[in-house]
Image 1 (cartoon, rainbow, N blue to C red):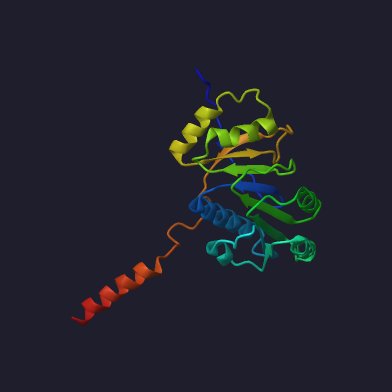
Image 2: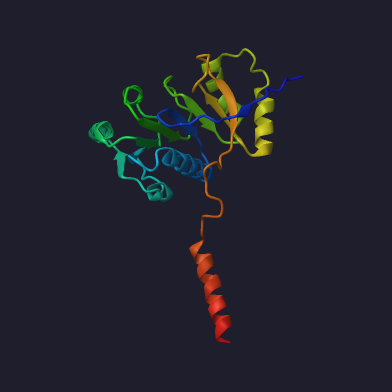
Length: 224
C-alpha cells in the first residue's frame, strides 16, 4: 500500500525570488497570476515597476494584457530579447517580471538571479528545466506523469513513494502542489500545498453584460 506524504501549506514570500507556474488552464493561470501579483504589490507597497515579457509566436491572451503593466514585451527574435533584458536591468526597483509563454533562456534566468530587488515569475504549460528556479507551482488537477519526473529530478526518489496519493488528496481539496527550495535547509527543497485563489479578491469580477441586463430590467420596472 502506498504511503501518503503529509504536506504543509506554502507560506514563503516570492519577493525577490525566481518562481514558475505550470498551467494549461486559463482559469487557473488568471487566478494564480492575479493573486500572486496582488500579494507582491502589497509587499512592496506598490512601488517599482511591473514588466510582462511574453515569449511565443502567437499573441498573448487578452486577459494577460489587462493587469496594469508598466512595460510589455512580445519576444519574437533576439533583438526583442536584448531590449527586454536591458529594460529589466535599468527599470526602477523593486521590479516584478512575469515571463509568460515559455521558459526564459538559461542565460536570462542566471542574469536575473544576480540582479537586486527583481522578482521573476515564469509562466507556461510545461515545467521549467533550468535549476535556478526556486519554486514550481502546479494546479490541483495536475497528472502524476507531468509532475513526477520534475520532482524526482530535484529531490530524488527517497521518501516520495506517496506522491500519487498526495495529488489525489490535493485534487479533492482543490489546492495545488508546490516544490520549493526557498528558505530550505536542504538543497533538494520540499513539497507543499498552496491555494490557487490566494490573493485574489473574491467577488471582484463583474460580468458587464449581465450587469447591464439587470439594470435594464430594474429601470423598466421603475418606469411602470
